[in-house]
Image (cartoon, rainbow, N blue to C red):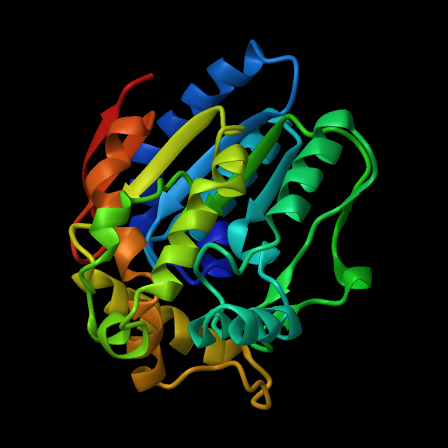
Length: 290
């Protein structure tokens, strides 16, 4: 594997190479052991709050397994299954205005995600959905990559991957300004929680091995997400209306706070490997169950 090329492509500091060697290469070897005994695509789920590095970890695992071990790897993000603006606007009118904003359970096309996994499992010709965050809509379907055979690994990464729903009594108290002002009756958060308890769990149950990049607290999310948005702005052509200002980012992350905090508290015990991060995203320790 060309680690220096990987660092350049992903705009990563040289210290990432040490992180990869210490933590992520052993993780890949662990995944290989499990996959060797599987007679179907081995599905790896990666959870991490916004900006925690899960997309980069996904790319590293894919690159390592394919270049070093010759494995066929398909990477999916739960973000790629977001509904388009038209569908979300319809939900905003029918259920609650906050559903116009992508992100929370209820704004993804989960039947499409399940169908994508089903087709990959069968080795059918499969188009992999891709979402363009800069335009806040999916890329045209003709631009989606196409897989024509069953892969060895499928990686599903996302901020809410593996997360569980809350008890209804926990929904009563707003967790931030957004919920207090824009969802005073709790209609939005109840809808989101019900969605998370439904087909999302059917999707997450398909995961064979769960990994979590665990932030120290939700406080880091704004800063990490801000960095992401600035990178997105640098890459964009300048006429993309989906790029957010710093203030918009601050409002945007509040949509994710409730589920993220719940996951930080309850998800580690359900994961096979947990990497504990500090506020600079440095891994301080890991917990490996298998």
